[in-house]
Length: 186
Image 1 (spheres, helix red, strand yellow):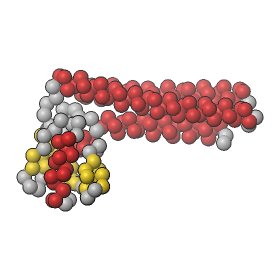
Image 2 (tube, rainbow, N blue to C red):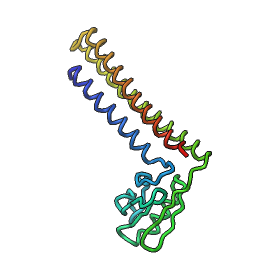
Image 3 (cartoon, rainbow, N blue to C red):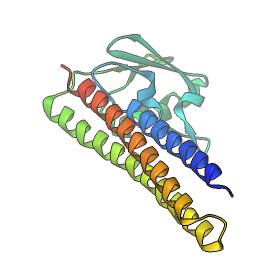
Image 4 (tube, one colour):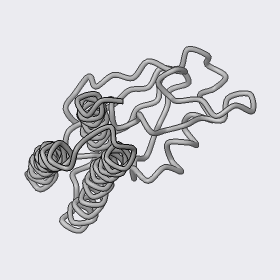
């Protein structure tokens, strides 16, 4: 495997880590209703753990309200239970057809908790990026040990990988800053 291939692979994997962090952030609740809030919810549907968005239509008809309309009305109770047992702190109510989820104002305490959660998610993203860097550095060393690349090539490639790592951790930090601001916005 050539050095350029290694670096392209690193770029692709680091991009995925940043995307994953961004997706994780979108599942966190802010003051606004967003269907992505329910992305992590799994429902026990006929003995199978199934993502909620595969079992229902999720809408945000108002800034502080989510509605969940199950495709199969018999799954209403299990969907409601899964939402109640989740860490979202939402209280569902239903009219037999549609589950309504009013999004309450976040308390100062809850905001601080969410900031901690989002910081942990960001750290996981940064760790994923650094793991990619570690893998690539390992492969570069192997190439040099096999005599397929010179020390100078290894050094230049390490600098490129470090630059990629810095860029991607910076992207995650920017996403984190935006999400924190969104959470703390009253």
